[in-house]
Length: 162
Length: 113
Length: 93
Image: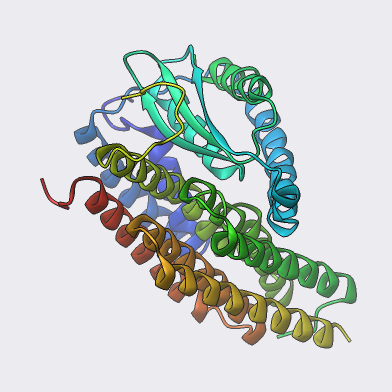
């Protein structure tokens, strides 16, 4: 199994994208599977770390939390832009957060979450010290943001991936 | 092409205006905000719910008007979701690197790299 | 009835997206630093992509989908190359 299909998630993803773009027919399914099988092997050249999923049932929960969180921060940032940052009182700044995870997949997903959420921007990651540098658009309380990243997202990602 | 039912038209119209509105606010922010790091947040309005709402409108519209599930716009959504972090992270790091190289004061708690 | 609602909504959305593109162009012209211009270009690409999806809904044709996909790919690669260029002043090391 491992020899034929070294990267099952990638192959499945490629097959789904192929089917969505061309149409759900048996012929396209066979063609898409062949392309996915061959193309996903090229991933080995990048030497990725293997992904192991632990608590799969947490994924939909995290997705739901994310859609709501992103919608809320969209609304917050939109309001701050329109009212001129509470009429000049908004303060932005950089914060550093020490993370516990060293899992590369978890870090990549955390980067997507942080960037997809308006209001937080990922600026740097120090792998030696395990410190993440974030820029926060509306920095009212630094502890709130650390709490959000560490206890809400990092914890969920670690439960799923470690 | 069949005429859409009224409720579907309202839903599609709502998502379209919501997406375009958020994108417009993001671009207003891009023009109005003062520092580069603040401006880095503005386009994410367009790439998160701005794009999602527009894509949802398109998926609902084409699925109903063609009478089958048309999902190809979701590929664009997936694509935006994967590429935006890469571009914005690299741009943020480039700006940080340039500011540090020129000794422009950047508000950082301590040196990260 | 539903046709009228859709027409008004798509026109409104298109107008807003065109204004958003103009604002991004203004940011590109104004700068002040190179990274601001690259950020403006990235926003311009995303806005153009959403505008094409909206045009696809107005005309009811799937043709625009492919155009927006191409714009997305080109925008991603060009922003990446420009950001890499700003980092060290070279694209290929």
